[in-house]
Amino acid sequence: MAMAAALQALAEAGLLPMEERSTARTGVVIGGGAGGMLECEPVFARYLETGADRMPVSSFAAFSCASSADHIATHLKLFGPRTTFMTACSSGATAIGFARDLIRSHAADIMVCGGTEPLCRITYSAFNALQAVDPEPCKPFDRNRQGLTLGEGAGIVILESLDHARKRGAPIYGEILGCGITCDAHHMTAPDIEGAGAAAAMAAALADAGISADRVDYINAHGTATPANDRMEAHAIERVFGNRARHIPVSSTKSMIGHTLGAAGAIEAVACLLAIERDFIPPTIHHNATDDDCPLDVVPSHSRPARSDTVLSNSFAFGGNNTALVLGRFTENGGDP
Image 1 (cartoon, rainbow, N blue to C red):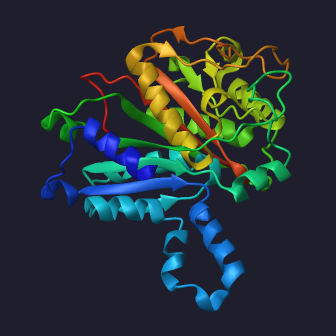
Image 2: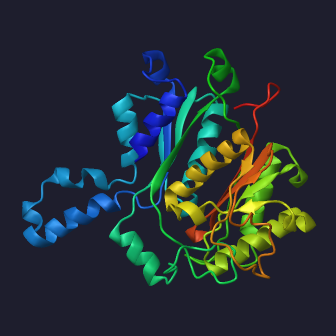
């Protein structure tokens, strides 16, 4: 999935086939939550059947959490920086933020970045054991929500400095204006219910972008539909946006595609860029009853026509790993990258 998404993104960016001078300055940063577990399961099953003496060493090659980034870089002969992030459900967003920093520091001209997550039995069993999976389609921020719906997928974006993109006439969907990364330092799986770490990530992203909270037109919420996580995020948004928290559109695309874990932050960044380009706000479907603990405009049921020049995308993960991205509409007076 990561390879397919990378090829789609590179093709849409007008970068295929890649010239040799481009590959020397092109890097890969991928976020992934499960890293090799899907490939591990059949190999381990075969080990149980045949024993370790019948297992070739090559069987273990795909177990590395870096396997997706390695495959992309090797297949496309990309010689720039190559990194993998595993910060659970914020991995894809963290990868995009780090790729932005690599371009800013002139370590690369082009970065292929995002996240990927295939579903596997281990992942499903773990979330089921935590009683975090809703037997019905998930209902983010709904009073009757019971948990998340698991999904799988990959999201890849191509980052360049503005000068580099202009020189080659690249299509530009938007700009990364800011990134904020914090940690709750609270619990292995449960969020800090007061949302201090999540609020700090949003505030850091806004400060990095050099803009005030009043400039944000739409928030793509982490919105997992687990009772504690949605309540925490609503509190965190209120801490950052004050009274405006009840009026700014806040929706969860996980209601439509499920929680894609390590890929979620990247897929949601893509959704935000499309929302900016096409002047609409994605909905939160399956939302029927407002939760008094989540007094937000969740854009229920249907998308909404609206112009958004600045969007905040939240990714809050196990271990309290929080990443927030600020994405903006591209203008000729825009920043870098």
